[in-house]
Length: 104
Image 1 (cartoon, rainbow, N blue to C red):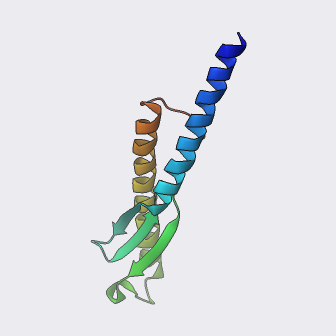
Image 2 (cartoon, helix red, strand yellow):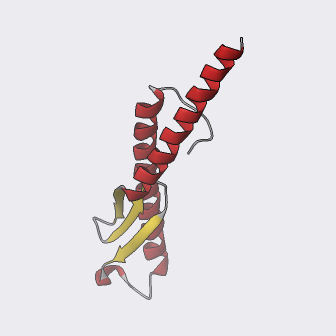
């Protein structure tokens, strides 16, 4: 009985170490979201952190700030969705396709 628990604990520790390594790898992976035909671009990493936002001068219109806000929001959401997809794919390779709620 104790031997079985020891094996489970060892496997859990190995999985935790692999997950920590995966988190480090995801922080290094980059995705880009965009809106307005690429006029607004957002770069994020695999940990859903925004790295940068680029806005072309042509879309900066003081008389239509709402359009720019909408494009920024859309580009951020696009980048975060791609980042989440990347994390899910990477996690799937680690867990063999099992979904573990709350990890990302």
